[in-house]
Image 1 (cartoon, one colour):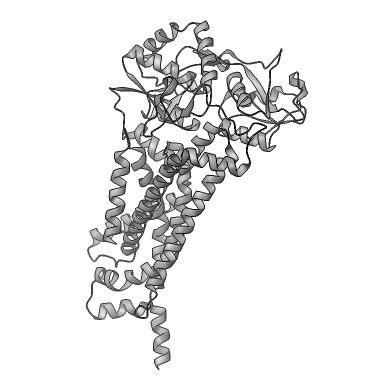
Image 2 (cartoon, rainbow, N blue to C red):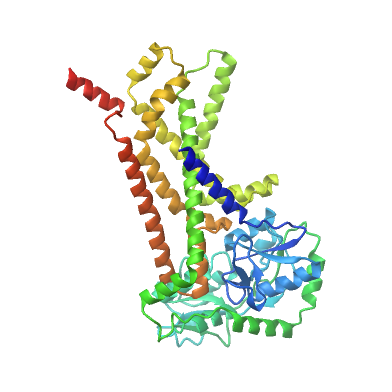
Length: 521
């Protein structure tokens, strides 16, 4: 067990040692999805002026990245992209995790309540993307989408434009454009509203898609069509940013966007002469296995450490909650108050989703208390305390399963509560709760996927990045599913082996002891 802890701790240090934390004095930290070509995307090399993504071996490029480089240059800093999910961009900014949002964001009235915006650095045009062979491929006006299932990205003005398509069915908003492309290709939706550069990208990448552009198109407010840089309201660099944007003429903007459309990642997997599904899967795995391996490694690291620390928390709470009440009144009161605190901790972390806990702990701690936590450490902390809340109840049940006669015998021998728990009860509890602990381990492996909201580069995050690069969503997520299955299946088999090792003739639980006594008598 000691060797196992040392190995895990060493792996943790090595993993965290590879995470580069940028200092605000040296870098301008830019928040973006890096998954919205041609505005921003992820690539494996620094070619075509790409910028390093913090904490990874990858780079970001696109129209937003090139604008970010100009802004950083005007400030005498190096740009550094902090890859963040769309819903996490504003929390990341207000909590100080990033310096600016340059991610194709419109300065809507709702967003202006939270953050400040620069002047516009691009003006968008809404269009509809449909399937080339679909029922709405020949649409010419907004009236031609009767009964069409239409959606757009959650939290953007484009979703509100669906009501202008007469008779269209407004589907639930989706998290990002990668999900929408996948839904469109599979026929879940008939189309989605996007901006012209993104639609051109999707159309060029997938021969099954078609962009519908209107002569008399959507009615869009000026603040919605404009795209601006998001900054904290107390940031005094706004004038400097606006001055840098003023130097970028409209002609330069158009030329830069055309250049980024030309340089964006191309997909050959969805063309008519594409290879078979399994050949595409093999190609993706061959070209991207290092990213899958790193993602799977971090997933294992977080889940193993979180499960072990959570088990330790559960054991400590279980021992404490079964301790006899102190004779001293003051200590008894403190013991009761601490017990109430533990109950609150257990109920809160069992009663709220881990994805919400991640947002609150990672962004909320920085915004409310000024505590900046490295995202990998934050992920381990989140999984650990979440697991600890569940394991405390599992341990409590395991302790109650031990025969009461063993407690009485220990007291008769003059053993303290601590000695009784350490030498008699806990060895049996650990064996009894091993299946439940294994189940928590498997759950943690899968639940690390929600940590992508705080930009932890685990397996799902890595796989989703590859999917946005290749535009081969089904193929990529098939690989992810197989890797998750291999991880969970392997863990299950290892734990079953450990259970069999515990099941020796010299080891019996309290219930087995009672049965043995009955047979002997």
